Image (tube, rainbow, N blue to C red; front, side, top):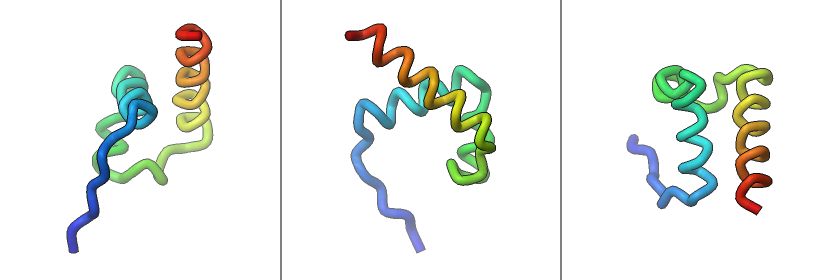
Length: 56
């Protein structure tokens, strides 16, 4: 069965960019977003928030 693909939003692209910067992208590709620890997810979310504030 194939995964349905959706168009990536700017929010999704930022999340992927930060995951790559933190060295987590390989883990995400292999196991999926659900396998990130709370600390890893929080780090991504925190950096996303910081960047959103800087743009404003």
